[in-house]
Image 1 (cartoon, helix red, strand yellow):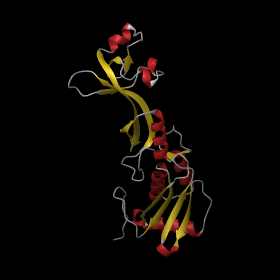
Image 2 (image 1 turned 60 degrees about the vertical axis):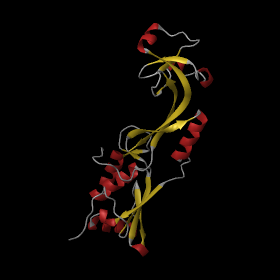
Image 3 (image 1 turned 90 degrees about the horizontal axis):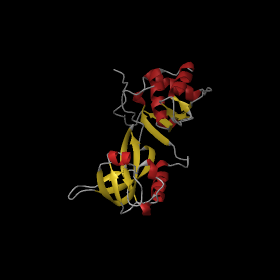
Image 4 (image 1 turned 90 degrees about the vertical axis):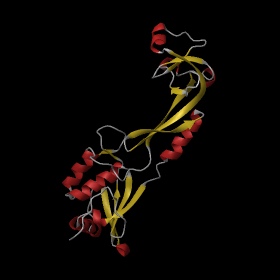
Length: 237
């Protein structure tokens, strides 16, 4: 399943990672550049890199002082510079696009920040309250019926909030991946197939897939909740 528009349930950054890079000063009055080390030198400790001369190209840097640099590598790295700092740059993905989030002074700081941002303990789940007008009337009534008369299902169950005339869905086995590969427990295609077998109506099915892809655990449809601009509204004339 591929999205043709932004998934409004996606929030924050995903696929957080870090990479050690060197800051290189290479010419008077020119801003520094940042490069990862050549694969053959990634095991060098930071103290053996900082303030060392190097050669570099658009892809990597090679420390030269005390190291034998093959001629082919030297040809591919025509620029000379001096490493002025060693940094750990953090990268995250937002709505499918990579973004540079910042620089950390050491690997421990980078790992700690990733742990804080990713909620890796597994106890954090997302909850959403959206307008029930994002469902056709018949589909909202379908949810109410599911809440009043629970039936077995593989990926979600319904419950009623009677005082607010709202109906909630609890989603299971999220996140549902939109791609065939990945670390998700279930693929969206697998979820879609099961829901179609269970006769889940189409608009509700699409909203649940979007929410499940964003690792939402509770999705509540409330007549008094604010609508989401990216989602269609179904209003009676």
